[in-house]
Length: 324
Image (cartoon, rainbow, N blue to C red; front, side, top):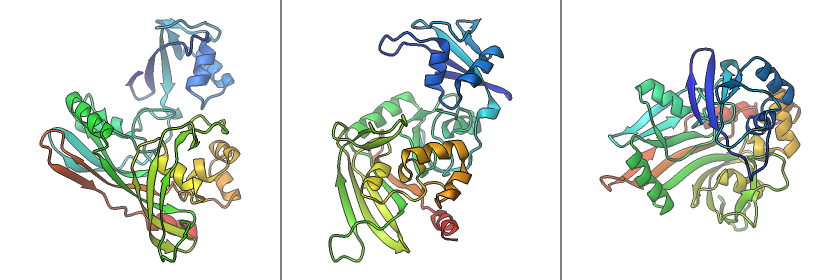
């Protein structure tokens, strides 16, 4: 996918390939790829000449062929607002490390194309390219690093593969960690595989799945606040939503996590109804309280041990909003 933008729309270009050889119409593809609009809305976009296929205006029932170019002139008003704030906390000729806000996607996906951290970085510094090394969920704040050059991105990818990059997170859990000892503060080591949640209709949802990939997470309770626990978290593998899945599996979902702290229909109801639905469920209105606290790795060029850390300053403020 490539994109160009002006002040009215973002031009999204896709090289189409059939999935498992299945024949799709243009409307089928749009409904599969962009799930935030229904069929009626997509047909309106086609009628407005916002969808083109190989330099021709698209038609809903057009059967797509492999390698066709599909262009969607996406109106910018469809893109949700974000918190665009980020701080540069590390930079050299190879890498840039940032502390991002808790309402900012890392890279273009779903509804977000312009309002993403990678796009904002390029705009602020006038860079044409930045290489994403890892991702944080939109509602996860904290440390994230990007490479400035492709060769550096390749070297960092090798470090990730060899598990030489270590991360520490802070989180507030919706319940106390289970305590099977006499310790005042609990800890838990979870070693359970994670994969696609087969019991959910939500495409992005993961779960403990014994056909999934091995996953290990360590939780250490730092402090109890009422019914909640502030914890330090160390993921030893890097699966999608790993911390959130393991926390929910042991009955202690991340506070504010709409995907894993609500049942399937609850998450969908939130997407459709927003905060009004959360209020009916007495569910926190703030983001999920998960923060990437620290990342540590050998520098890809100098081999020196690099530690990039960003203290979380807003957890208690957000938690206090929930306690009112």
